[in-house]
Amino acid sequence: MRVVQTKYHPRMSPNKPDELNFKRTIFLSLAFMSVLAGLSYYNLAVPLLLGDLEYGLVPETLSLFGIFGQQTIIGAILVIDNILALLLQPYFAAMSDRTQSRYGRRMPFIMIGVTSAAFFLLLIPVFKSLMGLFIILFGFNIAMAFYRSAALTLLADYTPDAVRSKGSGVQQLVANSGAILGFLLPTFIGLLRPGISNVESRYLGFPIIAVVMLLIMGVLFKKIKETPTGDGFLAFSDTPIAIDPVSFELEAPDATDEPKKRDLSYFTNALFGGNRSMLFLMLYVYFSYTAFASIEAFFTIFANNYLGIGDSEAGQLLLIYSVSMIASAFVSGIIGQKLGRLKALRFGTTGLMVTMALLSFAATLKSPLWIALLFVPAGFFWMTVIVNIFPVLWQLSPRSDEGAYTGIYYAFNQSAYVFGPVLMGLVFDFFGGGMGNERYLLMFPFIVFCELCAFILLYGIKGGEAHLSEAEIEALREKLVELD
Image 1: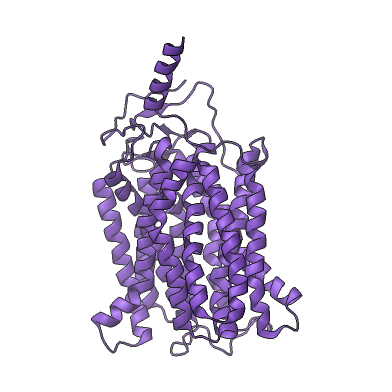
Image 2: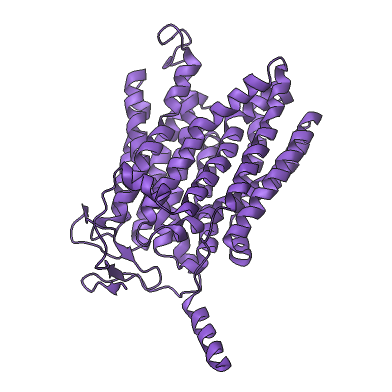
């Protein structure tokens, strides 16, 4: 049994074991909001920046080894963030579990990561050469990988297990509002500075989003006071540090706890060392996000080449999808709270299969209206999946190792983003040969197949549900006494 560590004391009032502190949850969610705000604008502006002919960062005539042209080079640069996240996030996340700092376990990572990412964003407009910009983008993506898992796990540290589904819903609502801010920033700039060119707008957006990220971090630092785990700014213990999510008391390690080396063997053992439920969950994550990554990668191409609509109309359809996700975030958390987390995941996955099957037929009508209507439930079902994955993940994780396992989650998540679009492209080429633009209809059956695989994998997950709260335990104890 763990005992309370008396040297360091909580700096926030404790939680109620079966009640969500909404105000605190909103502030905890700001950490992840800064991540999505930065990445959303990066994903929006950098592809356009690289292909901008005015600055010629990646000229149309540029080739690599005489084989790979402009688009391939741009695509390779853009996949850097996914590859770095795949390789680095598990290690950074595991480090945050062992952080000794007067600011707590996660805050030093957030402070360093946000400040570094904002610095690199400020530098992007300065560089007009491809090599210089490549170095800056590389630095930005390392900074984001450094603190992304810590930003997400901060919620688990200070939210009782019994209400984590509801808390995850609030987190996704707040965090995705940051993503919408990033996507709409060019529109805001255009309203404030009428007549500004697209190129000038993109370059102006980078310092603006950098300032936004720093402001978010400032509010987070003021409102959230993590329990101290050390005396300095950043040091690391040999074993993970546990904090009670109700009392926020720092817990001393068990006598049986041994130092864990966070090398490749640690992560492989986490998946293949007997915890089969975690392995099935990670495979579920991979197939689910492969479906999602396929939509992100190919929907605009599908809209242009098959539906015959432009980028603007395609963007509006995706905005409907995104707004539906955000609007349903809190409801998705309540569904997990009422039905149970695994039932909520089955509900969301089944809904996605049905919706995508309907979309495969609706797309043949070439009517953007039908796609827009079906994107509303698609966004709802997908958010139900996202919101309830994390409480299952944190519950299956060993005590005090939530950060490390969140990093493993991101490794599978980013693997889907790296390989999912490649698999989708192979489907187009292998099964769609000779179909012309009709081959893009294969996108929806491919997504249905991925979701079917995910649904089957859910039955390999045992556990992950919320533990009984102290109030529920006491009520059950009284009932048993009466029966006795």
